Amino acid sequence: MTDCWQEILNFAVKSANPEEKVYEAISKESCGDNLTVISAGKAACSMARGAYRALNGKIKTGYVLTKYGHGEALPKVFAVREAAHPVPDENSVKYSSEILELAQGLEKDDKLIFLISGGASSLFEKPLVPLEKLKEITDALLKSSADINEINTIRKRLSAVKGGKFAKAVKCGIDCYILSDVIGDRLDVIASGPCCEDRSTSAEAISILKKYNLDFGKEITDILQRKTPESISGVNSHIVGNIKTLCESAAKKASELGYNSKIITTCLSGEAGEQGKIIGKQAAEALKTAKEPLALIYGGETTVTVKGKGKGGRNQELALYAAKEIDGIKGVTIFSAGSDGTDGPTDAAGGVVNGETVKKLRALNLNIDFFLKNNDSYNCLKKAGGLIITGPTGTNVNDLTVSLINP
Image (tube, rainbow, N blue to C red):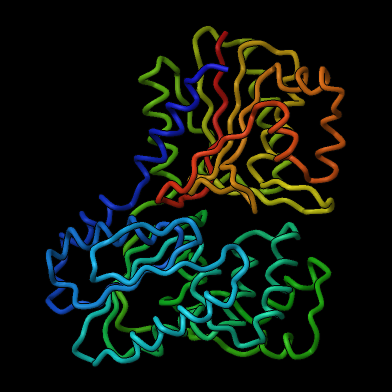
């Protein structure tokens, strides 16, 4: 495979790094002195660096909570802590309690700057149910085909800090700078909206459980029917990056490399396998009439209904389904990757395939359908040499899928 796809992915991810965006956004505001900065999510360290640069010594206390393996060395004013994602653990609860205590200690005339990125739904958590029960519920939701809007509708009702409850617990004003990993940038969905009024309803929460045939008992149903804050005051929210940024950067780099770049959608959703089939077919059809190199770009976030016991993620599964559609076709490379460097509970960001991928598997006497049926896309792509491994990227703005067509 050409290394061209790597240049496109690396450039897009680097362009979506929020440090500079946070720096620019905060620099435009008059934030005052003696500020408290809290940063939570997979991009928490990058965002904290941007805030530190912009505030120039005005931070009196800083607290960063990020995913295991995503912590970085920051100025001493920041305490850096790590917890679990995508299912919360004891550290999620411990460090979130410390954040809540810090924020509740602020007076009305103080100012809190809250930096929010995807992943905080798991990392920033003070549950209203036993942690083991919350783990069970979260795991079941993640293994269903529920999308992030649906999952977070449940999460925010089971939490003492989500769905605007954190903002309600704080006396001072809050400036939120948000890196969106949600299609449509809904503030009450990103990180389950700790500082935003809830636009979802209890009836929607109950209907989601019914939709996916999930039953966690009467106690959970009763909690889901409780009201969440419908209005929040004293909070100013700013989106500093999203999937549009990622796709536009990918298109820019692809154009520089000689491709006619087309952003097909920034709202890709649905089952990863079905979208992989569609994207593979679109690439195969485009090749038939293409007269110049073409890059078809898709951004968004798909889902996987987990039925097997294998290892993988939505991007890896999408890539494998696409591989079946371009089997034996020369001139097409397709990659799909999470901008945060993580795809599912794996160390891979996603997968890259071409017309030789399925052929390689056949030569090894491996059946791609067997792996797909077991949701074992990671091990299948590993055998085919198609895993994308980047490590933590410092950002989190959904997923990027690109078909590179070379007639």
